[in-house]
Length: 304
Ligand code: GDP
Image 1 (cartoon, rainbow, N blue to C red):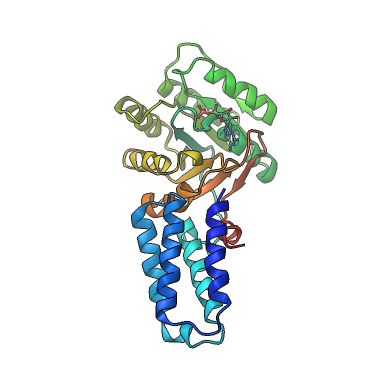
Image 2 (image 1 turned 30 degrees about the vertical axis):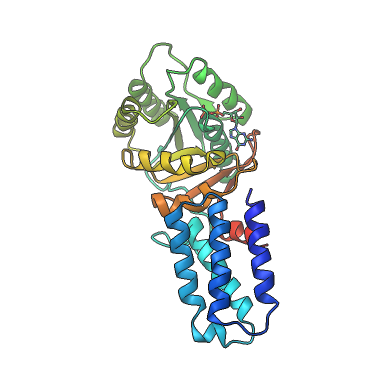
């Protein structure tokens, strides 16, 4: 992930740093190269354009160009803008830290997991459940609302056993909204802190899926609606996020397969295009292969 982008940017910045004095033309030339590198990493065009405009505006300022280490100053500006691009600034100004889950409500806090089939939704549900149990000492319950895909409910049950997290018993034939109601009742009775609803996926975003998501959201009143998308799908992941966010009140994104050799476009464009923070990154198939998404650290890795 980010390897090519990282190599390219470091090439540009090594050249900038190597020069004692910098003129405006040098900065503009470097930014042209950065723009190409971003586009090659599959960053959405308007996002790349905005980024370059912001960096250029700050970098051609007299204080930067007249400073003792202008190259270094420009790299610092790029770093800060990269953190912002990855979601480290804005409405939930976190200064580069991960945006935490909002679970501070009367229990059970409901986390609704949404996404297309194959994105890694069921796996991510179990990963986050395990994380909440082991790192935050939460009593968690998971329920699968996926009545479309054969064996989806069974898959969550097996993952629950591995993660040592309870799952709602399966009643064959029960429909998603009814399962959600039953899960809530059960979670209340058992004094569960966090109820995770693994909703059904589809191959594509369609009306039936959106109607189902809205119905489930209205009976379960989730405090978190996390969209799971596959980093390897690049701009498609961002488009999927845009489609979902128009329909259901997303609170964040889980970007899976960050361990694959994705170019990075989804991670870099997600915040700007959807306004939603990436809250977690999936980094493998195992249940502990998940990390809170820290914009600061990711930017550091890119410019490392
Ligand atoms: P769902 O259809 O969206 O529920 O997808 P699943 O959770 O069943 O995941 C589909 C496949 O992707 C499974 O084989 C998972 O093990 C795999 N998977 C999920 N997340 C990741 C990840 O972060 N990295 C890798 N390498 N594989 C993942």
